[in-house]
Length: 70
Image (cartoon, rainbow, N blue to C red; front, side, top):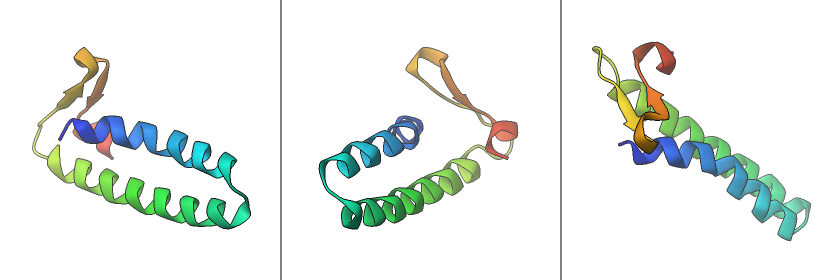
């Protein structure tokens, strides 16, 4: 599940890059999709780190513990 830490960070950047290619119509759709996916990942990550578990990625540079999930 540590892959989700990468995705939740890269998702807004991908949404902005796609938005720059096309106009306002795609920007609206990408904003809603990116927000929904980020919310779903945040909830899934928060559930997965309960009870003192810690997720780490990028050699420990990205970490999520139960306090950070709040």
